[in-house]
Image 1 (cartoon, rainbow, N blue to C red):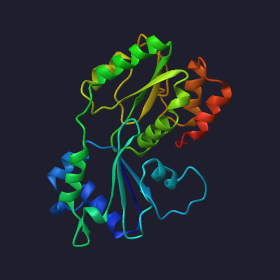
Image 2: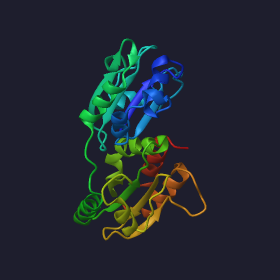
Image 3: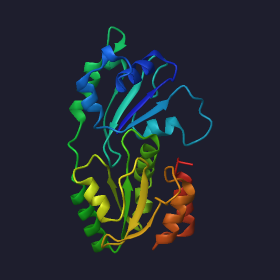
Length: 248
């Protein structure tokens, strides 16, 4: 995951998104396109007033990124388990006062990881669940999705409490063998992130992917998911988890 923080109206913010999405054709950089496709982007507006937690400052603290100056940006790369790989600033990736596509691409390429094998991740999670007498909480993430990034941060921040009942595993459509692994557990690759709880054989017990209901897994669906499949989690602990979810 790439966390990018800058003021919404700042020049460096405009430069970043122009490069990231290829909005300015002459500046389109194939190396940057290839590198950016390996990351989920979580963009934060650091010019927003801080009214209550959780907020953009909370996320920056988790990502070990210092709040950027008004004319700068903060960038951080996180592993799937939430560990911080590296942080930098927009100025460090700029040339002649402007964000440099080649420097940004090189920064991403240096810290990109090859996609993992979805089948192996699922097998390992099921094996661990069987040994521990737990269930498996599957998260189907979505590249370039802000709700997906927020759910991922929620899972990492709450993993100790979730571990009372579940072994957590993330399956991204970009992983090798993702379609087969997700089909095996009764799911489908979707442009909307979803959560599902499996028993230790891989049988789906409950899912937030409800037919006829679109949108990311918000608080009500996550609460129902956890309540339906709880083994050791108490009602109070489930409420604690739901309150920590930043997706409405």
